[in-house]
Image (cartoon, rainbow, N blue to C red; front, side):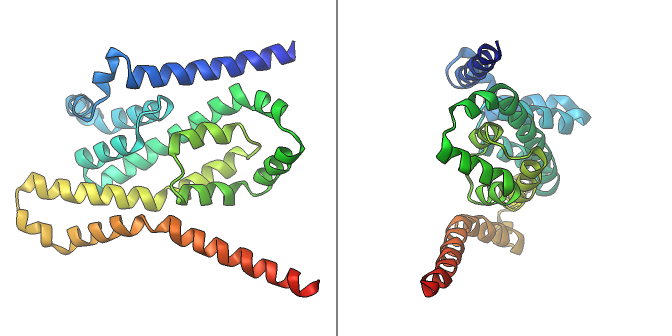
Length: 235
């Protein structure tokens, strides 16, 4: 009975993901998931626009909408600072919800497939959950697949949430600051502001963000080499 229930939940998870991808990418309803349509919806929401945006962001994550689309939309409508706050809030709630969906529907089935080698990996994630999630977030690992995927592992929920909260902070701020700053220039029509310190800083931060994964890989490689050296000396 338990095995049957586990299998049914996993099937439900796969059907849910399949339907989400179909609705957003291939169905006639996909026309409503464009930046223009979502922007019109938020403009019509008035003072409720921030709450509406957070709800859209949360739903978008669970429906596999591109995170860059939603983040750029938030920055373009609310500006670099409020946009960052609303984007980060929506991303955190959406990441937590997607994790819980993956955990409830898929964890038992995933655990039944794990062999001895994968079990060691699974146990390591449980022990080092915060560091693992933080590292993967800073490496810009695909956001939505990671949300559901981490739910299939033994990582603790609060390790996952705290690692995500810190890991997406820098990247989210840089991207919303970049898009929001350009939006301010576009809105005012003062094109000379493209040479302002604020725009230049946003461009520098945006370009520099692409080097974060490379820097992390270099640091990790150096740490692994330094850890191996004492072992080699003791042989």
